[in-house]
Image 1: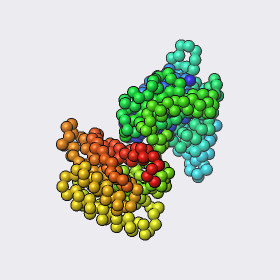
Image 2: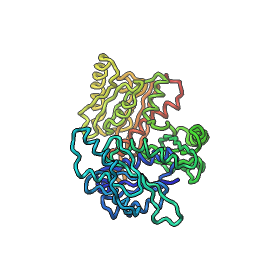
Image 3: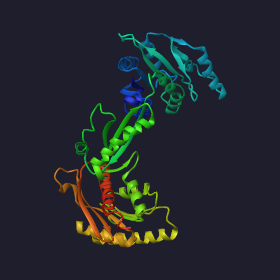
Image 4: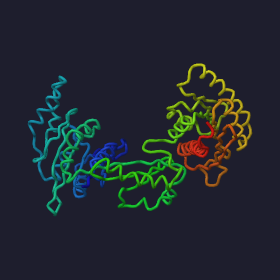
Length: 443
């Protein structure tokens, strides 16, 4: 069974508002075992709406519409449904009474324009709206179909809270009754970092293939690769049984490129390993604008990130200190004093052009100053205009530990925050890989 999702509104087609309803509806349809084959966005005109709905109804077994059910002149979904179905609109006295009662409960006289919300194509059914005045419309569409089949169309208001409640109470149960058999769809997301999308795909033995069961999809966002395993089965347990062998094959093929599952971030992986080893981490950032410290702070569940110093690349005299809020007052004072001292050391080291040697020296000083088990330092060593191609920066990433320093030099492309996030994630990935390579020898 296939579905089409149609979002209605000038605010969507002009880009003034992002269409989050369609994404939510597609996820819900997927959880019912229904594949969404197409998304359509149409403006608030009858002609465009009819064309969009006609196409959607011919493309799918189910159409979900969001938007256009309000009481104003630009709410035209009712007229669109009437045009496509060939059924004129009629006033439903029972629905009008429900709408009027809602206004009366708030001691408000119902505006005449709200009568429009009680107009329905002949033969359609009202979908109750527990939280608003716009009931939905449930209607069968057959125009244009030559095989005698019909498309089931559910029109819902565009207000997300109302739409979701109506979906859960009425639409989802109705769709489940249409399903020939129970079909559960479950996803499993495997998170990876350290290689590009094409490289990851080449490392996987015929997994990214259409028609495979379970299906494996690959997406990339801010240099993080997500492999999504999608299984269809009669039960959730059967879906998990399908996930298992495929996930095991992914982990075997990609090794340490895999750092987590579902909503895990690199900082989650680092926090967990540091906690297991009884280790701590401090950070000094130059040129990454506190991105590393921010990511680590957000995921500092076990308090293993003990603090850091952020030095802007353009003006190294201004220092920002970050310290986890969980520490007690004495520790906080000591941390700020240490950070002040460390920032002075950094400024002395970096008066001249930064080099890998100065960055590594700063990493060792950071380790000593914070008294942490590990100290991570990021710093630019070549400006973007000095690298062929422009819009690139060369960063030196150093990780100091009790036995020495590990360093790496990386060239990051992209603009603005894209480059910052890539650099920050690469720095954190160095920490993760170092911890994995040393086993439990450093606690």
